[in-house]
Image 1 (cartoon, rainbow, N blue to C red):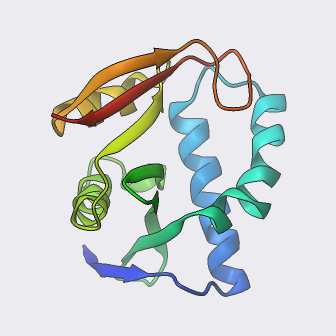
Image 2 (tube, one colour):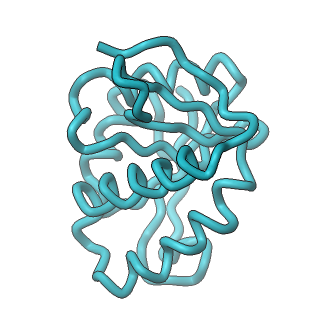
Length: 148
């Protein structure tokens, strides 16, 4: 069971580490195209830069632990990660609904993350463009999606 969304305007050190742990667990469960070197490359970027560049909201379980989080900027969903133990329990859908209420209308997704692509398409997003490289110039194609 989950509780209401809580906006994380200020993060305690424990919350920040939990966000990174959720990110890493989700990436390992869904981003099978990334090598260990890739994960270790992105991890400090997530921890030290990306989390600070978005408005964060999380969903906590009854135990108070963060089950998933979403990061938005303007009308974009910049990140959405769910603890793999909570996949399929509506955490991602609830976080997406919150992001949409905040005005999010577009999202970029790794083309090779078929689970995420299917999730966004199921929620009504449509592809409007594709990039051969990710935002850092790495060879991970990105699908650009927006609300239909």
